[in-house]
Every structure is written in structure tokens, then in C-alpha cells.
Image (tube, rainbow, N blue to C red; front, top):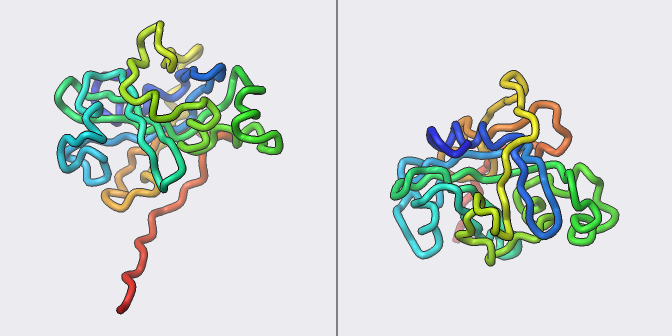
Length: 196
């Protein structure tokens, strides 16, 4: 599921399970990033203290803080030394519903508990402490598990990525068609420059 490059890994992660904090989510939406060759990737300008885990080995968690309030998680998928990762954009809570509700709020609809990358991390209780964790290690606090049933190829759709300023029209967002947890697509709109 993590071989063959970022787009292939993004497709392969659909239907897989992510478990943390007493909650398990079935992944319904992903987004691929190809490192230094991809203007939208956090690794585009090379390794930094923030993105070093993206340069391998595969199977580890790249967790980052965004907008000063949200955690998001990627699965590193490139060979050691070559940055590539898949953003986990959305999923359906399949176990630990009470724990997910406690973190996200009792009034939140079930389909919205992990709908969107920040909500997914919130539902699972994922934060900076998961940075660099080996997701394939059975002893890990955050586990990535294979799909119980593979997602049929005809159910996998792709389109432009969401919320990125560079390479936003690259069709590397993948989702399970018809899954209610898939987030709504919003094309990036550049902000107008402020005039003095």
C-alpha cells in the first residue's frame, strides 16, 4: 500500500484503517505529495527540521500544525531519502465512536467526526507526539492497518488537491465515490495583494 510513489500510495490507502486514542477510522479520502518535485509539498525546498521525516523511511507519520490551531497527518511513502507523503484527508469512524464524540463534540454529525484532515486528527487524538511514529509497528500508539475489504477500482475517483497554493490543479486527491465522509472540494483562490 506504500510502494509505487505518492499517487499510487494515496489510492492504496483508501479503505485502510487508522487507529489511535481508542478510535479507528476507515480512510475515505487522501491527497498525494511528491516531495522536492512537487510545488505543493512541504518538502519542495528540501529537508528542514519540520519535514525531515518525509524523507523516509516509508510507513512513518508526518504530523504538522497548521493555521495555528489544527494538526494534520501524512503517511510517508517514498523510499528512504526521497520525500513523498500522503495526507489523510477524511475517514469514517468505525470503532470508538464515544471517544471520537468526546473529542469532537456531541452535536457533531457522525459523518463529520473525521471529515477533513484536521477533524480526522482531532477525532483520533493525534498531535505532535505522533510525529515520526512507525505506523506499521504493532506496538505503535498510532497504527495503520490494511483494509478489511479492498475498495473496488471503479469506486476510486480523483481530482485536484484542496487548499494548496502551488500545483493545486494536479489531480492527486483520491476519494471513495459516494462515501458521505469525503470532504467538499474547494478550489484554491489566491488572496488579493494588499495595497499600501
